[in-house]
Each structure stands twice: as C-alpha cells, then as structure tokens.
Length: 335
Image (cartoon, helix red, strand yellow):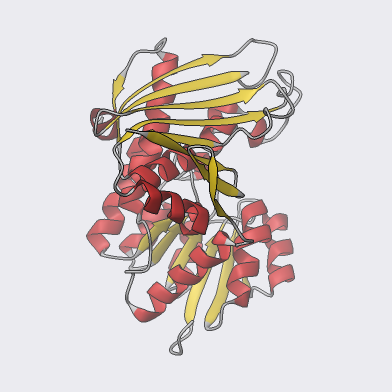
C-alpha cells in the first residue's frame, strides 16, 4: 500500500469470514487501523476484538456508526441481517465493503445501492475471484469469442435431515443454502468471464420434505446476447466426476473449461495452470488503497454492479416458488 494517511475501519459482523479472512488481511495491510467491531452476539464480538486488538466493541451497528469516526466499513453479516446499517453508513460518507450475498431481498440491496450512489462513496462486493488470475485468463481467452452457453455446477453430499441442523446456516429461509451462498459467485464470474448479463431467470428445486435443503437446485438463464446458462447445485454425492470443470463456457467454434482454481483447458488442451493466490487479500488490499488514495480505478466491481449478480439468483429463487415461471430480471430488480 502506498504511503499516506492511516484509514480507520469498522467491521460489522464477527463471524467466520471476519475472523478467518478479512481481519487477518486488514491487520497485514500497512496504514489500516481497525477501530471497532460490531456483532449482535456480544461474546463473539469481544472474542474477536481480543484476538485482533480492536479497541471498541458494539452490538448495534447504528451505535458504532454514530460513535466511531470511520473511513470505511466492512459489512460481513449474513444477508438476512442486512437492513439499513449499510445505507446509514454510506449516507454518512463511509465507504462500503460488502460481503456477498448482499441481501435476501432486492428492495434492501437497492436501498443500500441508492445510498451509496447518492453519497458518492466507494463501494465493492466481495466477488473476490475476479482478482484470481485463472478467471482473468478465462476472460482474456473469451474476449474475441461469441459465447453460446455457460454451464456451472457444484456437487456435494446429502444435506441434513429437516430439523437436525441448527443456526441460520440450517435455515433456507435465511439464505442458509448452497445455491444462495455460491450462486451469486457463479453468476458474477460467468458475467465477468463472458462480458454478458442475465436477462431472464427460471429455476426448479427438488426438495423432499425429509431434508432441510434441496437435493438439487437448477437455474436457467437467458443472457444479453441470446446465450444460455445453466447453474446447478446438487446435494447428492460426496464428490463430482473426475476432471469435470466447475465452469464450462461454449463459444462459437469451441469451449473452455475452468477446473476449480487449478487450470483451464481449451478444446481439450490445457492452456493455463494456476499458481497459489489469495484473492481475499488482494480485494481487501485494493479497497483499502482506494479509500486512502481517493482512486477506485483498481476495483473490479462496485455495489451497483453487484446487484446484477445478486438479482438473477433471487429471481430464480422466486421462479422456483412459482413452479418455474420465467422472470424478467430487470423488472424483478425494480419490483
């Protein structure tokens, strides 16, 4: 990070992402002072504060915003806990780093977005893999191609039986499901690699009552150039077939496969092999630098762009509730 003033940061949320990723990163970045931590679970907030030497602890986000002079706030609470704390922070001129998914409802995310844009503060959503070289290389390889279809799938073992998993992670209505956790990621990286947006969403879930989450969640998207995309989350098998890419992107004349974070093959030939890389740190570092320098040109997305990666998943979820009715995403975003 370049020399200059120290920026003051508040952290809203003391869960796993705060403790395992963002706070360790922020503590490594020169010129960053984490001045406060807030969580409704006071004991969790105090434990995190003690571990990372954070002087002030709060259980109310508004109180932290009112009392602490902050340049930026990292919002790392679950989507269901997002109400108006982020919008209030932005209105006070506090730059906003938002974990994803940004909200359970578009109206909440839209309210935050409006506050960010009206205040003119910097913002980003933690779609961190945009910074990973393997996705940047895939984007480069597709730059002169006409994408026809994108396939993404995530495969894991059977979910818990209904009532056996506690906490919000076991509550589908609060977003505790893999299609809502990684779905916005899959949409965002598909958008980033292809340069296309989703226009229409349709989804179907296979959700037997004995399980607390769907065994399969299948999303279909129509994209801005007429291309199609399928995004599938399976909770059925402990592993996926070997050598199956997470992302398979077909273009007129061929395809590329993005194999986890490992390598890219193009029409069956390995064309890129990834080295170890920490995109979490890179995004945290770049946002700190943007706040300190007053220049956000090195950020690869902002909160407004992030709405285009959240909305297709929420629209698909609504489509599944309606028995697979196709939903116009632009209209859904404004409803």
